[in-house]
Every structure is written in C-alpha cells, then in structure tokens.
Length: 277
Image (cartoon, rainbow, N blue to C red; front, top):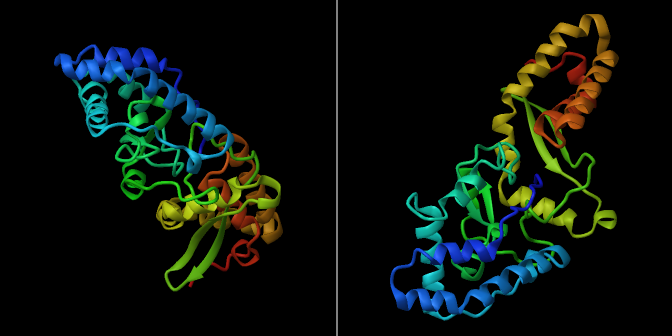
C-alpha cells in the first residue's frame, strides 16, 4: 500500500552477468538462447502492469528445461551469498525501511510479485522483486491475481491517491477501547484501484495486524485525554486530535497513527473521557 520507485537496473546486463557464472556449457547455451525472449517478457510485464494491471500479464512459453534453468539462475546467482549478482538482492532489501505491502513490517526477504512458481520468465526481473516483511510474504505465498478488481497492489506500478484512504474507529469493549481499521476509496472516481485496495487490505489481514500494532497509539490517545480534557474540554480535544491526524498524514501519509488520531477526533465519547470500563 506504499509506492516504491522501480529498481533502476539494466535487466539485460544483469541477465548476462548472471549466466556468465554458469559452468556447464549446455546450460549456458540454453540460457543464452532465451535471452531475447526473457528481456521481451520484462518489457511486456512493464507495459501490461502500467496499462492493464497484474491480472493481464501473460507469461511467455518456456520449456521445462528452460524454466528449471531460469529458476536455478535466480537462486544461485541472486539469492546465494556466493552469487555474482547477490548485490542486486542486497540493494533491494535496503531500498525501503518498512514493508510496502503492510506499511509497517520489517523488511526480511524478497517477494516475487508474480510468483516464481508460475512466472519463471520474470523470476530474475528486478521489477518483479519486491522487499517484503515475513508476515506479508507468508500470507501471500503463491497468490496470483484473480481479475482486474482482485489483485494485490504492486508497489512499483500502483499509485494510490494522495488523500486519506485508511480509516479507523474506536470501539469500546469489555477489555477497554480498541481500534478497528478499514480502507475506503470511491470507485467511481478512482476506478479499479479502489476494489484492489480493499482486496489487498483484506487478503493480507491488515485490520487484525494493525489492531495489534495500534495498542501503543491507543495509550498515547488516552494519555492526551487525561492531560488535556480539563483544560480543552471535549470540543477542544476533538480539534487537538484532528490537528495531530493532519500532521501525521502530511508527514507520513496513510499510517495507522493518522487513522487513529482521526478516529479519536470524531468520537464524542472518547473525547469526553468515556473510554474506561
């Protein structure tokens, strides 16, 4: 749900560098023979992602031998610490501080946006390799796009509008207040990116994952109520929380903090101090 710049890596040069380490002449000949097709696959991938979306990407036909060699090339030359192209993997890992799929998770590994088990034609392509946290990668696994409305958002190609689309509500439970999260975009205005955002949010279980992480923010919200209610009153607290929400959004975009402060600003009971059981 956070956009990243697409890796500025010359794929043909990367491919040639990777196969240069192949020792078996027969395997090297096969990999050299499919070079143009592999490069064409990345060009078609980019064009389709930009114009139609992930669901429309069509993989090129490769023989079983070609697929096996392409997969091995990725594992031995990019993933392996002894691989000649390992620096590409390392550069991708440090290209962002937090997971672009969930907005918060620690980057732990590299995800094939289109799963390598199904798309060996782009198995080495940096435009298909996305830094990701372990929980998101574990949930995503070999998930393929379903259709134009049901596909995860691609951090390199999808751009969400610069407006609030992550929202929260404060619910009072027997154990105290909890934050519940949702996403919302107007499909009439923004097209298929709206249902895809909702699909992305639901598929990666981001409401429940954000609830766990939001406990710290709730403590901060409650502390503000206790500190400012007597002086500001409920109305003043609503203005305070709205201002904090705007600051968080201006600095960091759609974060759970921005959504949480916005939720507090619209909750009359919470701003009146009615959150304790």
